[in-house]
Length: 94
Image (cartoon, rainbow, N blue to C red):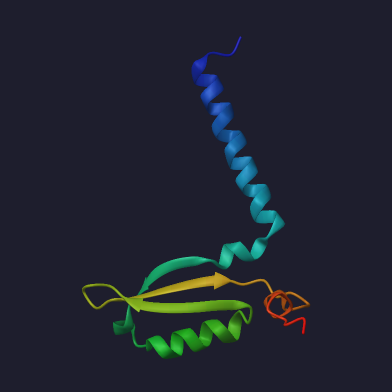
């Protein structure tokens, strides 16, 4: 007979399994992250961004600085579609 602790463990495991299935459905989401980039290690921020765009062509890269001036890099995957839906929505019918 499962107790409350066992039920909590099963719920946690189920949530982890659902997250894993979501990742398997769209594996590019693994490329999405935000991190600090240390420019003092010898590679400039511009070179790092260019390298990311070369290695992962479908990834959108954004950079910003925090209050202390440290570089923050955010990578996002944008899915490409066959048709541009925005263009169709904005099409003038006249």
